[in-house]
Amino acid sequence: MVRIDEPSLANILGFMALASYSLTLLPTILRIVFPQTKETGIPKWLLKRRRIIGIISFFLALGHGLLMVEKRNFDFFDIKTSWIYIQGISTFIIFTLLAITSNDWSVKKLKKNWKQLHKLTYFAMFLLTWHIWDKMSGHWTYLTPISIVAIVSLTVLFIIRLGLEYQAKKQKYEGNKTQENLPINITK
Image 1 (cartoon, rainbow, N blue to C red):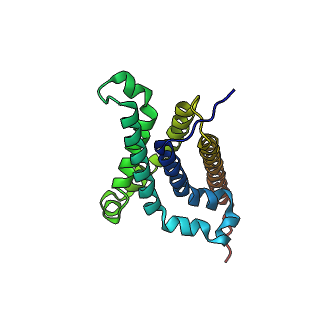
Image 2: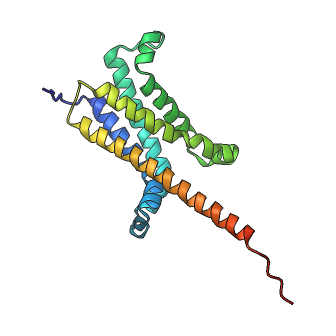
């Protein structure tokens, strides 16, 4: 039988970090997977606030991490311990890079590299799925199933988004290829 634990403050902060992080992923997913949501204005509203929501997510994740380090008496120099928490550490490193570069100055300085750097958020999504599943197995709180459903749903929607984008590019490429093969009609 699964025992439901009471969530600690660290778990609540982790859940809030996940919720706000999820909001940063939604604008593009909604626009591509559910194009009808454009009419509601929700994707546009989220897009305008994506950076600040991402920074809030970072600080919530920081609080989560600090409380967990304190609770578990985490030794950063112990390789075994670091390996056990590799998903959380890696995700936090990515969140840190994204938070540090979530400003206009970084966008101007990094140019195209800024966009490439911020694509790490999708890698973080997969790491976060692994982190939640791995760390919460056997320590379920009422927040655990909500967290798992949320991150797995976002991951599935992201994969659907990639498929739709691939199909659109393929159709565009085939359309351009067909136009190139059309005979040229020269009329005088």
